Image 1 (cartoon, rainbow, N blue to C red):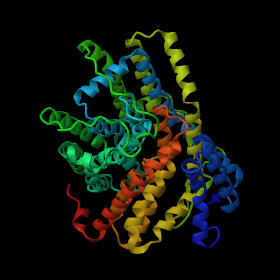
Image 2 (image 1 turned 180 degrees about the vertical axis):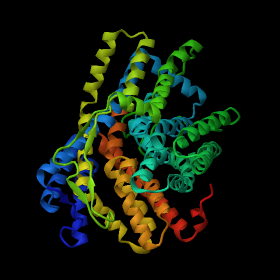
Image 3 (image 1 turned 45 degrees about the horizontal axis):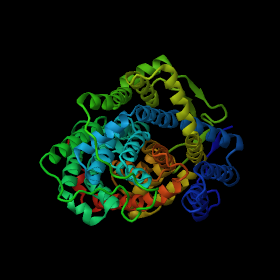
Image 4 (image 1 turned 135 degrees about the horizontal axis):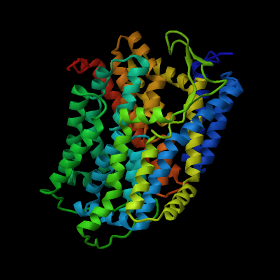
Length: 553
């Protein structure tokens, strides 16, 4: 029997919205204030979501359980699979000693920690976001930063802040391509609109990142390098998104930004070298940072060996992200499993959709085409290049699996929570609360995207969730549908730093287990402040700068 979603079960949007927010509030309060371990907090959030869905929203209990189960499977593959294998590669490199050589070579570009942060967290992270997404950039950059001596809180929090501006075009443009495909937007027009919103923040985020790390004065000491980095990313981001398409926006922008920064540092260095590796004002948080040591000189062959695993990783991640490669691998093996009792048994209703629309619930075991499989192959090949024996490789993989077991469990529970809110309609209740804001909708509609990513952990999922609602609300209010569709994605990127999935990835990459609450408390202000700035910018586009809505390609 088909179950139709109800978005205001109590006939009072205030009560319904408050109830819909309970599961997320439970998880965030447990993590951020009660210092409960992440997997327990996620479990409590999921239990409360089940109770709200069944008792308040009238969702059949069996359907609710299957929705949570579907989310759990998604948590394991693709998300958990990426985390496991990227940590596996790091373990191999650390045991071999090549990770230390890589850290020394990165330090060799500059001794200044602020500039290292720009290069690794912003530029390098943006490349991995563009190539793979789904937690890969935070896992890579946080792991490298902790190896360079950054404190765990600094490595985790700053990697999350840096991984914002590239998210809308992550994984070869997947979020915006999905938005256009699912909800009928013109792909090039909505891509161009995002490309007129995010470049401003691509310029702002590097300044924000260094201010968050070292304070305003220290930020101003290296403003030329920050400006070069930001412009090196923002200008290609605008040009590629407006005149080429969404697929290569992040990759091209990240490469240009990285080249510009490295070239600039050959002719300019700050007068004062910043050597602290802890966040300003948080010097004792996250344990003591590694003491500064004399950096040894390495031979060219040693440097090549140290960089080889990461070069292999880059190639595999890029190739695995190409649509033809994914399609071919899926043709070999990608069995689909419709969830009996859930698939096409839930209907979305007005005003979210113009007519009742059934929700599919199919889990695809795309093991071959999953990004994590590409990372695993890159890790195994790298291990052989590093002269590991097969039994050593297996042993290291087993050790890694044991190390991240609670992180994987947390991701499973959190994705179960996010998926359940989608099928029960509680997330739509939250979205409708934003949609009922009239002339203020450009601001609050942007925050709807922020809520979507914070809840689901994915800009793609947020676009699927709220993209249709954004279109309907914009048309009713006489706003540009492309503006609000783009705003959903652009606002969503700022929610990426507080979604529980990303926080768990960061804590795992830095081996700072059971400190997810500390990370959440640190990044929460930055996330809210930047999301509000995006909302204000979109409001200005809607009412003050209408010329930015014109099609220019």
